[in-house]
Length: 384
Image 1 (cartoon, rainbow, N blue to C red):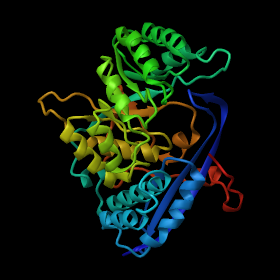
Image 2: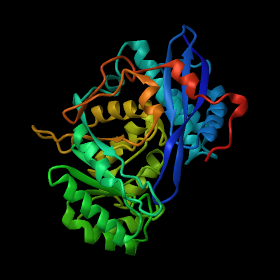
Image 3: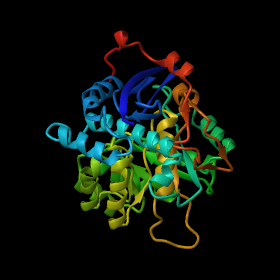
């Protein structure tokens, strides 16, 4: 049994209404997924995070390095892809292409062996994960937060015990919005903020100090990801935990965050930073610094399931008899690809999601839905 075929698909879902954050506007969701099939017909699915058409080009570049290999030797395959692209792919989109292939290999390996990915990673340390709702994006340029009250109450009704909102409109506007959201959700629901690297150090310090009374669980990407030492300085000037890492790649990039004491919480996107193979190494590295990991997710339910299995395997540091709940990002913005592409559906019960127990990632693709969203190869546009 060897890897016989690697297929990539660019899927696009036009949104019914655009939304935006501190950097730009979303009018559609466009995602690249990959299917790896063996000579005996078994297959696995993966997903990459980044510009879909560029991801697909990277997957096409990597194919000859993977075809014909033993799918059970996924770490050997990862090392070969990494070594043969090292001169031009130490960071960025080609690492995300490697990640998509790596995720598909883990799914495939689990299906071949009849085991869930969490077991292949070393075992599930927990049976459930507590998702937090990512939402509260801006919906109107004249009144960006006009629908916040209605939206956040929907999350409360769904049973979320933690909610992340967007900031980055300016200190006064952010303060007003965060204060209002804390008033609406009360004291028992966690509240996180994310500026998508909108602020200078001075601005971030000012905003963080003003928001400290509102019990913010973390301030995500307050600064541009290049400024490791500024992140460290911000941490020293606020009691709000600082989170970041969705723009980092490989354990070497995350080591920069850790050695500079830049963050309290690491947020690797497993579908971009090197796949599950590299995520295990990032987790081991983080454990030596005593830093918490809460992965970033954005895409289809493939990526969400990748995060579920990874978080299930994370060691609780420090260990204790009554371990706290582990958090996972669960995007709530409009996304037909997330809702319709895979089965069985993700279910949240009493604010928790169970770790899948089916082989591989525990899901499969509805290929009728895949065909509905897939862009024909001869019509693929240039997509940022």
